[in-house]
Amino acid sequence: MPTREALDRAHELGLDLVEVSPNSRPPVCRIMDFGKYKYELSKKDKLAKKKQHTFQLKEMRYRPKIDEHDYQFKTRHVREFVESGSKVKVFVFFRGREMAHIEFGRKILDRVVTDLADVAVIDVPSRLEGNNMSMVLSPRPEVVKKAQSTKTAVPKQPKPTADSKPTAEPAPESVADEVNERENN
Image 1 (cartoon, rainbow, N blue to C red):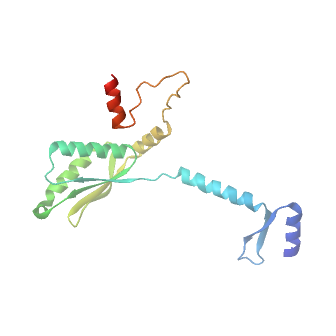
Image 2 (cartoon, rainbow, N blue to C red):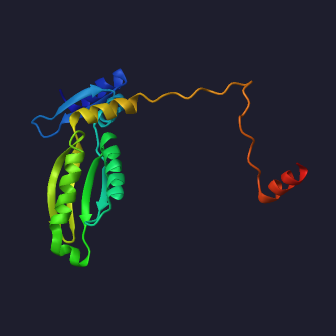
Image 3 (cartoon, rainbow, N blue to C red):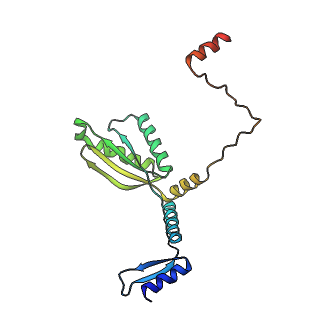
């Protein structure tokens, strides 16, 4: 149909004439509400982004001569990061003469892998980059599902009622108010 006739018909219906395929011969057009069409496209984009799962990359740094308590503390944090659904870059930082004994760093990374085998898998194996030996751990699929289910099930806080009173006294506004309050008591 001629362009002028299509524009007149779209105007009669109160809609827009939208060119769907400009490269074809003849060009293909549709009569539609363009504002509604753009709104539906934006809703589809938002829904796609909502369903998309993104990983956050956290980092944990170890040293070759790390003490046992420090190792346990850092590994506990790595476990928490992985259980929350994040990827973790674990690296051993070497300084000076420590570069002569990179096997100590490899032992630490291997130990981290064995300690976290129940929740994490190796995403990028250990490799030496300059004075760092690093690897990336990612959560196992069952850990990701568990983390997603706990994020959606957030416990609700009870709403305060009109007759409920605050349990703690309000903090004084300044040091002078606190001194005056102590003198009165």
